[in-house]
Length: 118
Image (cartoon, rainbow, N blue to C red; front, side, top):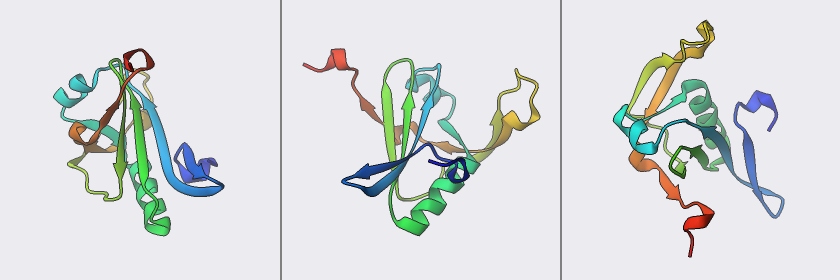
């Protein structure tokens, strides 16, 4: 989607929008993310997803590729566990630290890799 929407994709079926999607990659397992307290998503992305949902009533799908699987969570309610100020500090960029929502990893559903499907 155009950058002004702040999310990666609009999902379509037969030419009609059916949802909005953000795709992330993390160099952790989902268990490690859970042990850190949950999945962190920028409050800017979360706010954009909520605004698009409020205007369209179309769900927001967050897809996360971790070291152990690909996961997704579908959101039609936008109540995070908490809001924290976190981010990367290794690149010396003050804009990498920002308010983030913390999402319970139990909301995510695992998508098996192709070699795991019988």
